[in-house]
Image 1: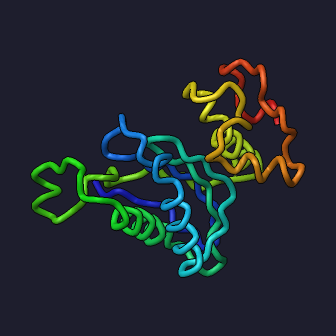
Image 2: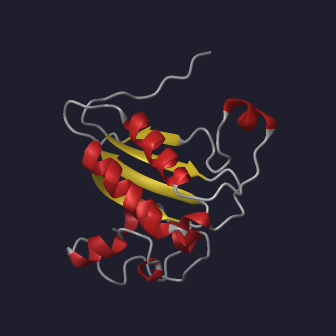
Length: 176
Protein backbone atom coordinates (compact mmCIF):
# COMPACT_ATOMS: atom_id res chain seq x y z
CA UNK A 1 0.00 0.00 0.00
CA UNK A 2 1.37 3.38 -0.96
CA UNK A 3 0.70 6.38 1.25
CA UNK A 4 -0.77 9.29 -0.70
CA UNK A 5 -0.63 12.87 0.47
CA UNK A 6 -2.93 15.63 -0.69
CA UNK A 7 -1.11 17.84 -3.17
CA UNK A 8 -3.33 20.80 -3.93
CA UNK A 9 -1.40 23.88 -5.04
CA UNK A 10 -2.42 26.86 -2.92
CA UNK A 11 -4.20 24.56 -0.48
CA UNK A 12 -4.71 25.16 3.22
CA UNK A 13 -3.52 22.30 5.39
CA UNK A 14 -3.79 21.36 9.07
CA UNK A 15 -0.80 19.57 10.63
CA UNK A 16 0.11 17.83 13.84
CA UNK A 17 3.86 17.39 14.33
CA UNK A 18 5.19 15.54 17.36
CA UNK A 19 8.46 15.17 19.20
CA UNK A 20 9.86 11.65 19.31
CA UNK A 21 9.87 11.74 23.12
CA UNK A 22 6.35 12.78 24.06
CA UNK A 23 7.26 13.50 27.70
CA UNK A 24 9.60 16.37 26.83
CA UNK A 25 8.97 20.12 26.99
CA UNK A 26 11.49 20.98 24.30
CA UNK A 27 9.18 23.00 22.05
CA UNK A 28 8.21 25.54 24.70
CA UNK A 29 11.67 25.47 26.31
CA UNK A 30 13.21 26.39 22.93
CA UNK A 31 10.30 28.41 21.57
CA UNK A 32 12.46 31.34 20.45
CA UNK A 33 14.56 29.02 18.29
CA UNK A 34 11.44 27.39 16.87
CA UNK A 35 9.94 30.80 16.03
CA UNK A 36 13.17 31.88 14.36
CA UNK A 37 13.22 28.71 12.24
CA UNK A 38 9.57 29.13 11.19
CA UNK A 39 10.25 32.72 10.13
CA UNK A 40 13.39 31.74 8.22
CA UNK A 41 11.67 28.89 6.37
CA UNK A 42 8.72 31.16 5.64
CA UNK A 43 11.06 33.70 3.99
CA UNK A 44 12.72 31.05 1.82
CA UNK A 45 9.53 29.10 1.04
CA UNK A 46 6.53 31.39 1.61
CA UNK A 47 3.33 30.28 3.26
CA UNK A 48 0.59 31.91 5.27
CA UNK A 49 0.46 30.70 8.86
CA UNK A 50 -3.30 30.68 9.45
CA UNK A 51 -3.17 29.38 13.02
CA UNK A 52 -0.72 27.59 15.29
CA UNK A 53 -0.23 26.39 18.81
CA UNK A 54 3.03 25.11 20.22
CA UNK A 55 2.66 22.70 23.11
CA UNK A 56 5.53 21.19 25.07
CA UNK A 57 5.82 18.11 22.85
CA UNK A 58 3.76 18.79 19.73
CA UNK A 59 2.62 21.47 17.31
CA UNK A 60 -0.72 22.02 15.63
CA UNK A 61 -0.48 24.36 12.67
CA UNK A 62 -2.55 25.42 9.72
CA UNK A 63 -0.83 26.90 6.68
CA UNK A 64 -1.90 28.08 3.26
CA UNK A 65 0.57 27.60 0.44
CA UNK A 66 1.09 29.96 -2.52
CA UNK A 67 -1.16 29.37 -5.56
CA UNK A 68 1.53 27.56 -7.56
CA UNK A 69 2.94 25.48 -4.70
CA UNK A 70 1.95 22.24 -2.98
CA UNK A 71 5.23 21.35 -1.25
CA UNK A 72 4.37 21.46 2.44
CA UNK A 73 6.61 18.42 2.98
CA UNK A 74 9.70 20.47 2.11
CA UNK A 75 8.66 23.18 4.58
CA UNK A 76 8.22 20.67 7.41
CA UNK A 77 11.49 18.93 6.56
CA UNK A 78 13.28 22.29 6.76
CA UNK A 79 11.52 23.37 9.96
CA UNK A 80 12.32 20.09 11.69
CA UNK A 81 15.91 19.82 10.46
CA UNK A 82 16.81 23.50 10.96
CA UNK A 83 15.38 23.46 14.50
CA UNK A 84 17.24 20.23 15.28
CA UNK A 85 20.55 21.72 14.14
CA UNK A 86 20.20 24.47 16.74
CA UNK A 87 20.03 21.99 19.62
CA UNK A 88 22.78 20.09 21.41
CA UNK A 89 22.98 16.39 20.51
CA UNK A 90 21.69 14.97 23.79
CA UNK A 91 18.59 13.05 22.64
CA UNK A 92 18.27 9.28 22.63
CA UNK A 93 18.59 7.65 19.21
CA UNK A 94 17.46 4.16 18.34
CA UNK A 95 19.52 1.92 16.06
CA UNK A 96 17.51 2.85 12.97
CA UNK A 97 18.11 6.56 13.51
CA UNK A 98 21.81 5.98 14.21
CA UNK A 99 22.16 3.93 11.02
CA UNK A 100 20.45 6.65 8.95
CA UNK A 101 22.36 9.48 10.65
CA UNK A 102 19.14 11.03 11.94
CA UNK A 103 18.56 13.02 15.08
CA UNK A 104 16.06 11.60 17.57
CA UNK A 105 14.09 14.79 18.16
CA UNK A 106 11.01 14.55 15.90
CA UNK A 107 8.73 11.71 14.96
CA UNK A 108 9.45 10.91 11.33
CA UNK A 109 5.89 11.35 10.14
CA UNK A 110 3.24 13.93 10.84
CA UNK A 111 -0.48 14.22 10.37
CA UNK A 112 -1.76 16.43 7.59
CA UNK A 113 -5.29 17.24 6.51
CA UNK A 114 -6.38 19.30 3.51
CA UNK A 115 -8.92 21.89 4.63
CA UNK A 116 -12.07 21.33 2.58
CA UNK A 117 -14.24 24.38 3.18
CA UNK A 118 -14.93 27.32 5.51
CA UNK A 119 -16.54 25.15 8.20
CA UNK A 120 -13.56 22.81 8.18
CA UNK A 121 -11.26 25.84 8.38
CA UNK A 122 -13.10 27.30 11.40
CA UNK A 123 -13.22 23.92 13.15
CA UNK A 124 -9.48 23.44 12.80
CA UNK A 125 -8.61 26.98 13.90
CA UNK A 126 -10.78 26.41 16.97
CA UNK A 127 -9.18 23.04 17.62
CA UNK A 128 -5.73 24.62 17.47
CA UNK A 129 -6.61 27.46 19.83
CA UNK A 130 -8.46 25.24 22.31
CA UNK A 131 -5.76 22.56 22.48
CA UNK A 132 -3.83 23.96 25.50
CA UNK A 133 -7.11 23.92 27.47
CA UNK A 134 -7.91 20.40 26.28
CA UNK A 135 -4.51 19.20 27.54
CA UNK A 136 -4.92 20.99 30.88
CA UNK A 137 -2.07 23.50 30.47
CA UNK A 138 -4.37 26.48 31.02
CA UNK A 139 -7.98 27.13 31.97
CA UNK A 140 -8.58 29.69 29.22
CA UNK A 141 -7.14 29.55 25.71
CA UNK A 142 -5.94 33.17 25.86
CA UNK A 143 -3.64 32.28 28.76
CA UNK A 144 -1.40 30.07 26.58
CA UNK A 145 1.36 32.30 25.21
CA UNK A 146 2.49 29.95 22.43
CA UNK A 147 -0.63 30.37 20.30
CA UNK A 148 -1.92 32.49 17.46
CA UNK A 149 -5.09 33.09 19.47
CA UNK A 150 -3.46 36.36 20.53
CA UNK A 151 -3.31 37.49 16.90
CA UNK A 152 -6.98 36.52 16.44
CA UNK A 153 -7.98 38.52 19.53
CA UNK A 154 -5.85 41.52 18.50
CA UNK A 155 -7.55 41.52 15.06
CA UNK A 156 -11.01 41.22 16.66
CA UNK A 157 -11.59 37.83 15.05
CA UNK A 158 -12.18 36.27 18.47
CA UNK A 159 -13.16 37.81 21.81
CA UNK A 160 -10.59 37.71 24.61
CA UNK A 161 -12.80 35.36 26.61
CA UNK A 162 -13.31 32.98 23.66
CA UNK A 163 -14.16 29.44 24.74
CA UNK A 164 -14.21 30.17 28.46
CA UNK A 165 -16.45 27.84 30.44
CA UNK A 166 -17.09 25.46 27.58
CA UNK A 167 -17.81 21.79 27.85
CA UNK A 168 -15.10 19.78 26.06
CA UNK A 169 -17.78 17.67 24.39
CA UNK A 170 -19.14 20.56 22.32
CA UNK A 171 -18.08 20.46 18.68
CA UNK A 172 -15.47 23.15 18.08
CA UNK A 173 -17.40 24.80 15.24
CA UNK A 174 -20.42 25.43 17.47
CA UNK A 175 -18.98 28.16 19.65
CA UNK A 176 -17.27 30.54 17.29
